Length: 460
Image 1 (cartoon, helix red, strand yellow):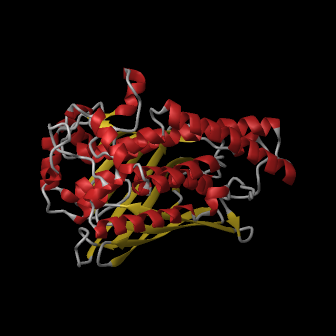
Image 2 (tube, rainbow, N blue to C red):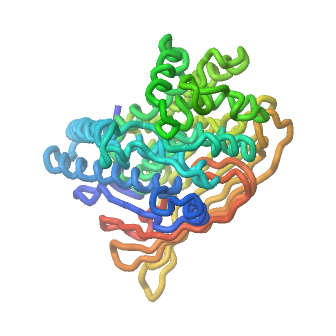
């Protein structure tokens, strides 16, 4: 079941330093924070990359300390002990992940899911509230985005229908990006995260959520939701995510208020029952539900992080199925390690109603530049090229791309200043809230709590 994971660059390490802990925090993310200020949420809304970093960092800390605990208890100096060590670390790490997600809530994957929903509102100047914060503020800490006005949703559907659709699907997009980031840690940096439980937990959640509309009590659950949301401010901005997603995906020109009046008699009826879907919309959502199972296709899911071909070369693969603003993106991620270099090469298939269009993505481990005989600057490039449709009905193929340069300046052996410059043309990119062309800049700090050599440092 388990393949032993070395430090990613050479022979297995025998010390507890084999479990590197890397954390990063983008403190400034532009232009998102400019948009958040316009929405009155400068200190109450996180960008996609900021929220992703917070949640990923907390999971990294969990895995790091569980790895250290079990390294001391069951030293993995034989094949049998390595298996016992990994089983024990995955059990205890998985229990922490479960409690954190469903009982801690704030800053967990559940919080991340809601923050990704909110970014689509924030960039359009629409205030909202993440109800996971009720853990601190009283009330029920649940997965809901509330305090959104009907008139704002009416305006968003009228002015930017693709952004409305994307905001509905962005929640599970966040979960797949979290798993992808932790998988990159394992492959690029040899982190040995014991995250089998999280892989299965989040992927199963996504599969179940997209397929939720098939349940016999689905429409009754919406009735219950509507009974709770008598005040407009208490209503979730979408309801259950995916019947509204498929509804508005197929109806970009229908006014938002055409949903009808809320059962209370006040405001718009936001949540979409299956009875409101056409046969075509229902069948399409059935297809998306089946395709969600593709997200299980990866050796990472069962704790295999590196498959060695020989002493110099290793690889891994993972499949992702993202729902988005025009339909979906089916991605195959290929992780390739050769000597001290690590690469992520991805093939994308962008699909709307009429066309399947290609895309390609490439990222590599950082280049290291010495200053005064010391390792001081690291630069990690990434690039994407694509042909994408504009929306669900577009028969065209719009070329586009993205360039990203992620840099770090090492202040000492632990702390680094990080800066990321990213520019993209019009198009959908997982983890970027903007569908139009945009240049962005992130600035923050990172820390590496292990003895890394110059090739081992990883940037996310």
